[in-house]
Amino acid sequence: MINIHKEMEKVADLLTAARDELRYAIDSISTIYYHEDYTTCQAAIENCLEGYNAFLSIMETDADRDELKHKFGRDIEDVMKKFDRLPPDNCNKHNKYNK
Image (cartoon, rainbow, N blue to C red; front, side):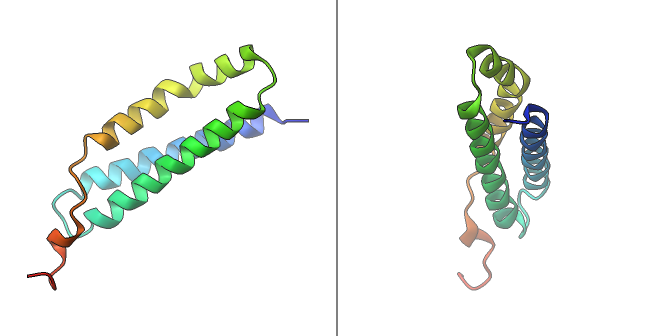
């Protein structure tokens, strides 16, 4: 049997991690740390989406899926939109060996 509360906590934790990594990426724009923060943020968002979609797939009813979408859908979409607005990751820009 699925422990709904535990699964929701997992998705919430993944969303929190994605938000944190987004904040780090935003804070590091134009620094030598941006490449790493950008790629870590991208991975955190992908992990969040995977966890969210996996949870959706095991929900037994449309009502349960709708509740999950209502609880997390907009927040996940918001993180993805903010990530999409970040400057592109030009990792060579900060590499001192590529002059």
